[in-house]
Structure formats: C-alpha cells, structure tokens
Length: 94
Image 1 (tube, rainbow, N blue to C red):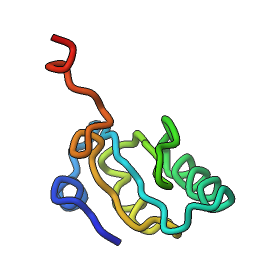
Image 2 (image 1 turned 90 degrees about the horizontal axis):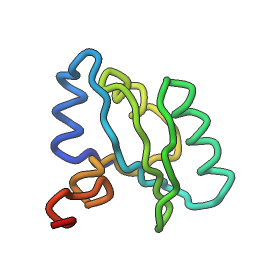
Image 3 (image 1 turned 180 degrees about the vertical axis):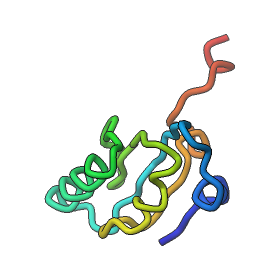
Image 4 (image 1 turned 45 degrees about the horizontal axis):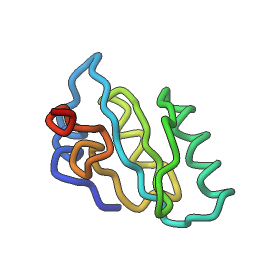
C-alpha cells in the first residue's frame, strides 16, 4: 500500500486527539468493496465523508487510527486530502 509522506509521518508519530482527513484509494472500485472498506473505517472510529471519483473515499479519523487503517483490506493508497486538493483552499475564494 502506498502512503504519502505526511501519512507516513502521522502513522509513525500520531498526535493524540488530532483528526485528519484522508483520501483512501481503493484497490477494487466495485461497490461491494467500497462498502466493506467504509464499514471497516467506521469500525476503527472513522467516518466516510464522501465518495470521490476514480474509486476513492474521503474519510476523517483520529491520527492514532492510521495504523489500524493500514491493515484494512482493499486499500491501495492513503493520502491527505489537502495534498490532492479535496479539502479546499481559502485562497481560492478571494
């Protein structure tokens, strides 16, 4: 599984009580797989915020849960939502 550099750092040194918004890329884009991954994310205390194009999910969870997320079957990559522009940018509104 690919982990972006910020996700790797958070996995190695999670900040207690801090949440993070991630883009979870699925290894299989079938609806059943997305549903199973979503259920697993909720099982570790995260929430699926929305489904994204190209077989991805935007999720929010505690940084301390990243290690558990890495063991979920059906995930090919984890990236921060800010890295790929799904979290928004206040500068765009100006």
